[in-house]
Length: 125
Length: 150
Image (cartoon, rainbow over all chains, first blue to last red; front, side, top):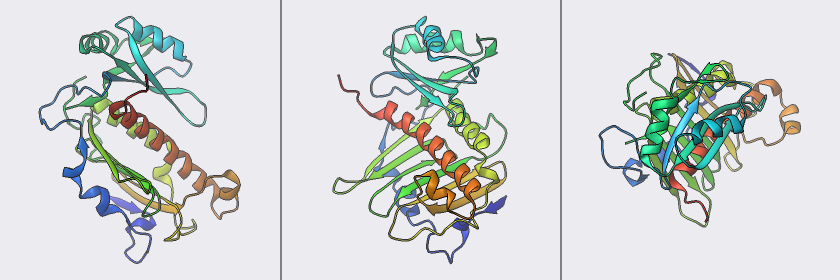
């Protein structure tokens, strides 16, 4: 493992000022679940899926059309790259777990503009 | 696609931490090797807000893609201005594919401020990468924890 950066230098006064704050407070975080078993985790307003490996020319409408075949989309967030403004990933929220499961089953590995997309649960237990 | 926490990308342990602000007024994201995404936000006089959730393999892979394509793993902060203890700073620490970076800089918000520095190209890549990491992590935390107004 090669290390690069001033953050490793003990002499630097700027070293890891806040490390203890976030690193040690595990139990005091508002956790989404206390269960340890795997499987999808519901978010506050519904079930959120992530879609990645999206064709660079795909539009928001293309993606909405694809996901709306499997249920009512309560909310969608599009993440774009800063340089080109292309859609890199989407977060799609359904109200029902069955809708989200149906979308994962049918859309993961399916093609959008000829390119295979990945669709999965965004959060797990 | 399933939600087990195995290293499906086959490129070893991944760790990411981003900090922005001062000791009393900051946001921080951390993604642990066990796929816990932790978020802390302190803006006085309100209390410290902490959130944590577990991400799927696919979500973690997207963090890795953002990191790889941003170019931050190829940077070096040795020529950047040192952050001062009292003003806002940015810290980015990432462990990915046998490289471990831990960079810091004063938090620079404008291209003109970056342009006056010794390594404007590197600082530009650094802050673009920070913005993308922060944007993606923020969209996950908001989507998972925040109620939308009716």
